[in-house]
Image (tube, rainbow, N blue to C red; front, side, top):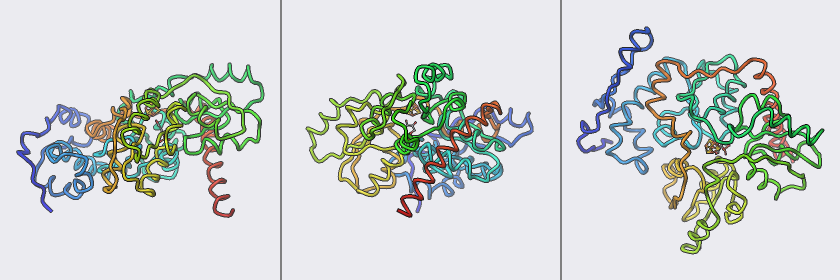
Length: 370
Ligand code: 13P
Ligand code: SF4
């Protein structure tokens, strides 16, 4: 099927100076980023996937990057892992695997590619390196941080341990490798409850997200000691704004990420990890849904699910939005920014991440075998 674009040359991307630099370093030639007939033809099936969320006028900007990235990643034996918060042109058009933090970590460990390009934030790329130290892990922008990861240090964990001797420490995967290295086990929003209950203790330290910990505390008898870390994106949502939407439209289904304040989760019909939220929409097909989370996720689901109306009071994660098609292409040409983790820290952090993955496997097995 051919796509009619209005005056595509008006949207022709600027070819930057990287072409010369790439030749100088003797690495892959930087591709010409022209919206040619060949690019239009080759990318037309991809546009079909995203046409409900990307205006036709924007496609000639994205398509040359998408075409070049998909060619280069084969030459490099690279895979692109995309978190659910990546924009649709990344999520649907260049990624090889997409998912929540837990799924991406497992995929990094299992992938047989030489190079992993992490479409996500720094802690995700570090987790990939921890699990796959022999692989080249690249993040298209090293500045892509996370307010939770930067909220806590190994010294904070030491202080918590001193205050609560013998209490196990469960660390959210949204943390640095150095913090993971001094904790007992990691968790993500999709497995936090299982991990917390896996110790069989009365108390557990669960850091650094206070909202996640307080949301979990409502679902378990384990006493949870927490820390004052917050996701700058989910912390902004309020119960008042959700109640206003609900008052206008009582049929609205509201689903919220557990990094939101407990008062927000209380108003929601469902709460879960980004994967759980996506599955909820796909399996339940609510007429109208509000995904109380980062903005791109609704776009990514809306591209696939056409019988659901998405109401979008959402917040952008400025760190996730640092990952763009242009930066992914640069990272494939130059293999930057490469993630390195001190091997001693990496071994200890790996223990904490692997313990989490094993708890997850056991729970899955238990569900299957009853
Ligand atoms: P998920 O593990 O649910 O994908 O969450 C990661 C994240 O950063 C949410 O803000
Ligand atoms: Fe971190 Fe929040 Fe961004 Fe997720 S959405 S990466 S928790 S700042």
